[in-house]
Length: 63
Image (tube, rainbow, N blue to C red; front, side, top):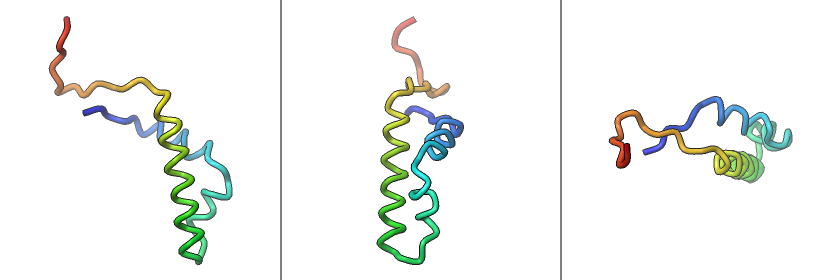
């Protein structure tokens, strides 16, 4: 299992569109859901470019 660095998530959140960050606080359920989906997509896109950080408890297959 890979571990994700919280710094990577913070960078992804801060690089997300402002409307999506603010949209989480909207009274409209539809707008909150749309904003959350946008933030989630942005996080997934940003993390796809990062190399995986190996779990320290995982045994290595190759020396």
